[in-house]
Amino acid sequence: MAFNFTSLQTPIITADSVNKNTVGRGIGFLLPFGKQTGGIFPISRTTDEQMKVNLINFIKTRKGERLYHPQYGLSLYEFLFEQITDQDTVSANVKKSILADFSFWLPFVNVTSLDVTFPEPNSIGVTMTVVFTASRANFTIAIFIDNSPNANVEIT
Image (tube, rainbow, N blue to C red; front, top):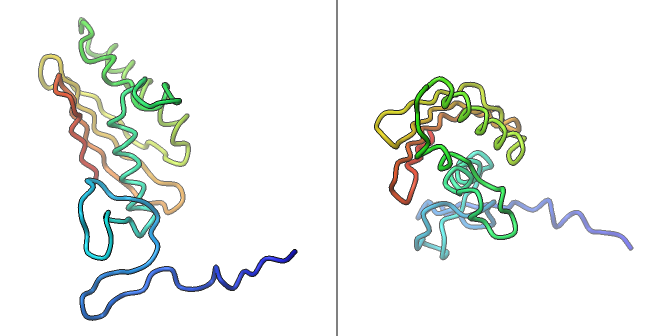
Protein backbone atom coordinates (compact mmCIF):
# COMPACT_ATOMS: atom_id res chain seq x y z
CA MET A 1 0.00 0.00 0.00
CA ALA A 2 1.40 3.38 -0.98
CA PHE A 3 1.06 6.65 0.84
CA ASN A 4 0.28 9.86 -1.02
CA PHE A 5 2.79 12.49 0.11
CA THR A 6 1.32 15.26 -2.06
CA SER A 7 -1.27 16.04 0.61
CA LEU A 8 1.53 16.85 3.06
CA GLN A 9 3.09 19.38 0.70
CA THR A 10 0.13 21.76 0.68
CA PRO A 11 0.65 25.07 2.47
CA ILE A 12 -0.28 24.77 6.11
CA ILE A 13 -0.83 28.44 6.90
CA THR A 14 -2.51 30.95 4.66
CA ALA A 15 -3.02 34.64 5.32
CA ASP A 16 -6.17 36.66 4.98
CA SER A 17 -4.97 39.86 3.31
CA VAL A 18 -7.90 41.96 4.53
CA ASN A 19 -7.95 41.07 8.24
CA LYS A 20 -4.33 39.88 8.52
CA ASN A 21 -5.54 36.75 10.30
CA THR A 22 -3.70 33.50 9.76
CA VAL A 23 -5.86 30.52 9.02
CA GLY A 24 -4.70 26.93 9.12
CA ARG A 25 -3.00 24.44 11.34
CA GLY A 26 -0.72 25.50 14.11
CA ILE A 27 1.84 23.75 16.29
CA GLY A 28 0.21 24.12 19.71
CA PHE A 29 -1.75 26.35 22.04
CA LEU A 30 -0.48 29.66 23.41
CA LEU A 31 -0.95 30.78 26.98
CA PRO A 32 -3.09 32.20 28.45
CA PHE A 33 -6.11 30.52 26.90
CA GLY A 34 -8.62 32.95 25.50
CA LYS A 35 -11.03 33.46 22.66
CA GLN A 36 -9.45 34.32 19.33
CA THR A 37 -10.85 35.34 15.98
CA GLY A 38 -11.19 32.31 13.73
CA GLY A 39 -10.86 29.76 16.52
CA ILE A 40 -11.29 29.00 20.16
CA PHE A 41 -7.69 29.17 21.40
CA PRO A 42 -4.70 31.21 20.26
CA ILE A 43 -2.35 28.96 18.31
CA SER A 44 1.44 29.06 18.03
CA ARG A 45 2.71 29.15 14.46
CA THR A 46 6.46 28.66 15.01
CA THR A 47 8.52 26.19 17.01
CA ASP A 48 10.24 29.05 18.88
CA GLU A 49 6.87 30.42 19.96
CA GLN A 50 5.77 26.97 21.12
CA MET A 51 9.10 26.43 22.88
CA LYS A 52 8.44 29.47 25.06
CA VAL A 53 5.06 28.01 26.08
CA ASN A 54 6.65 24.64 26.81
CA LEU A 55 9.31 26.29 28.97
CA ILE A 56 6.69 28.22 30.94
CA ASN A 57 4.67 25.03 31.51
CA PHE A 58 7.77 23.13 32.63
CA ILE A 59 8.95 25.86 35.00
CA LYS A 60 5.53 26.45 36.57
CA THR A 61 4.89 22.74 37.15
CA ARG A 62 5.87 21.52 40.57
CA LYS A 63 7.26 18.01 40.92
CA GLY A 64 4.47 15.63 41.84
CA GLU A 65 1.80 17.84 40.29
CA ARG A 66 1.49 16.17 36.89
CA LEU A 67 -0.54 12.99 36.71
CA TYR A 68 1.45 9.91 35.60
CA HIS A 69 4.64 11.97 35.47
CA PRO A 70 5.37 12.83 39.11
CA GLN A 71 9.00 13.75 38.36
CA TYR A 72 8.04 16.32 35.67
CA GLY A 73 8.72 19.95 36.54
CA LEU A 74 11.27 21.96 38.48
CA SER A 75 12.29 21.36 42.07
CA LEU A 76 12.51 25.04 43.00
CA TYR A 77 9.72 24.85 45.56
CA GLU A 78 11.67 22.24 47.52
CA PHE A 79 14.32 24.89 48.22
CA LEU A 80 11.87 27.68 49.03
CA PHE A 81 11.64 27.23 52.81
CA GLU A 82 15.01 25.60 53.31
CA GLN A 83 17.12 27.05 56.09
CA ILE A 84 19.73 29.15 54.30
CA THR A 85 22.88 29.27 56.39
CA ASP A 86 25.23 29.37 53.42
CA GLN A 87 23.81 30.96 50.26
CA ASP A 88 26.58 29.54 48.07
CA THR A 89 25.74 25.95 49.04
CA VAL A 90 22.01 26.39 48.52
CA SER A 91 22.62 28.25 45.26
CA ALA A 92 24.83 25.39 44.02
CA ASN A 93 22.14 22.84 44.95
CA VAL A 94 19.45 24.86 43.13
CA LYS A 95 21.65 25.12 40.02
CA LYS A 96 22.39 21.39 40.09
CA SER A 97 18.68 20.61 40.41
CA ILE A 98 17.69 22.94 37.54
CA LEU A 99 20.39 21.56 35.24
CA ALA A 100 19.39 17.96 36.02
CA ASP A 101 15.70 18.66 35.41
CA PHE A 102 16.37 20.49 32.13
CA SER A 103 18.76 17.83 30.83
CA PHE A 104 16.27 15.04 31.56
CA TRP A 105 12.98 16.63 30.45
CA LEU A 106 14.17 19.16 27.87
CA PRO A 107 17.35 17.69 26.30
CA PHE A 108 16.91 19.90 23.22
CA VAL A 109 17.45 23.04 25.33
CA ASN A 110 20.98 23.99 26.39
CA VAL A 111 21.38 26.12 29.50
CA THR A 112 24.22 28.54 28.75
CA SER A 113 24.11 30.71 31.88
CA LEU A 114 22.41 30.30 35.24
CA ASP A 115 22.28 32.72 38.15
CA VAL A 116 20.45 32.07 41.45
CA THR A 117 19.68 34.82 43.98
CA PHE A 118 17.67 35.14 47.17
CA PRO A 119 16.15 38.65 46.92
CA GLU A 120 13.81 38.33 49.92
CA PRO A 121 13.34 35.88 52.77
CA ASN A 122 11.62 32.72 51.52
CA SER A 123 12.03 33.63 47.86
CA ILE A 124 14.26 32.49 45.01
CA GLY A 125 15.18 34.39 41.87
CA VAL A 126 16.64 32.59 38.87
CA THR A 127 17.95 34.18 35.70
CA MET A 128 19.04 31.86 32.95
CA THR A 129 19.87 31.93 29.27
CA VAL A 130 18.93 28.93 27.17
CA VAL A 131 19.48 27.98 23.54
CA PHE A 132 16.91 25.95 21.64
CA THR A 133 19.10 23.55 19.64
CA ALA A 134 16.73 23.15 16.68
CA SER A 135 16.67 26.82 15.67
CA ARG A 136 19.62 28.16 17.73
CA ALA A 137 17.25 30.73 19.24
CA ASN A 138 18.35 32.31 22.53
CA PHE A 139 15.84 32.86 25.33
CA THR A 140 16.43 34.68 28.61
CA ILE A 141 14.27 33.35 31.42
CA ALA A 142 13.62 35.24 34.66
CA ILE A 143 11.95 33.22 37.42
CA PHE A 144 10.80 34.53 40.78
CA ILE A 145 9.10 32.29 43.30
CA ASP A 146 7.90 33.01 46.79
CA ASN A 147 5.11 31.66 48.99
CA SER A 148 2.43 32.70 46.46
CA PRO A 149 0.75 29.88 44.54
CA ASN A 150 2.22 30.77 41.12
CA ALA A 151 5.75 31.39 39.97
CA ASN A 152 6.46 34.57 38.01
CA VAL A 153 8.15 33.59 34.74
CA GLU A 154 9.22 35.98 32.00
CA ILE A 155 10.81 34.77 28.77
CA THR A 156 12.39 37.19 26.33
